Image 1 (tube, one colour):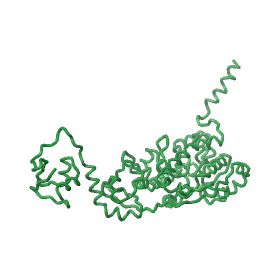
Image 2 (cartoon, one colour):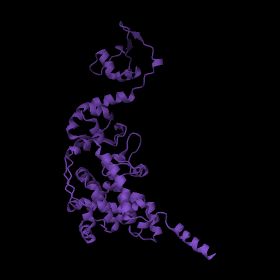
Image 3 (cartoon, rainbow, N blue to C red):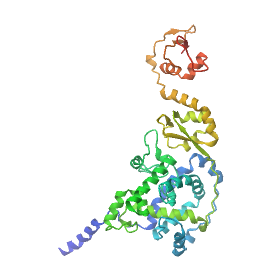
Length: 414
């Protein structure tokens, strides 16, 4: 009986341990982030702008050595972390060191892209974060989340620069449906992230816990606090958090370090110029991006890259809440062509499919045997074209109509 108790007691102890407390090394924690970061970055490098411009400019001077880093004393890294002017405590320990090693190694061939994107995105991030009282250093969180790729989508469905889940995005007023996904809108998603982080800080009163809750949810952090006897510090509840979250905060701290001290580790990136000089225009009518591209002479890939939130290539502008992001050089062309874009879009969006077996009986015939239609009161070119399954442009061409005016009783060739 004593032997049986000795065998059962350790099993009971194991069963009582939190499910998240499986042992793992700092290196394993860092490696779990490797595939996610690489996948988001690979998608980013294949995007329109980087595919077109970055490959001409990527010049790496990789002097970074893992051996040299491993020989670097902890005291040096600790001193550098303490010297950073941040609101969030820059904790240094074995977990953070392993993530610094991981990001320095990965950034050795990616840093020029990251720094160039920082120049583009950070003014937007800083404005929103400051407006909601969120520490500015949280702008680096997007490197951990998405490698600064607005098109990044995780295996569990999180999307955009800030990797919002569907439900959280809805809470913070991000529209997500089959037409629009504002989790991919740079400005709106950043405002939502700033609001979310500010709310989490009000709950926990600690920025490291707020960051952890951003990753795994406030409920999981509260459970970890309860399992840790009420300890309200990230490192005090560390082993009671989900495994991914245990690596999330050290990863963020490491990215802040790397983006400030990369030169001290022998990295000499070459920034390149992305020709992204943009402006936004309010859209109050429904539009198809294909007509914006054609009539305003904008590269279709560039237009989609600047407006990733319009997932179906359709801007439901009649709702009055959307803007288009355009290259500054194309804004005047867009304004000049706007009426035509709206008309062409309306024609395409309202056109009904032609039913071959049930064509309407023609009201008359022309001498050449073609169908004709007599204009009635209330008819428009658009309604007539719709009724007969043709485009307005075709109807106008067949009848030599230059403007939009028609008169009652007029015979039109269909």
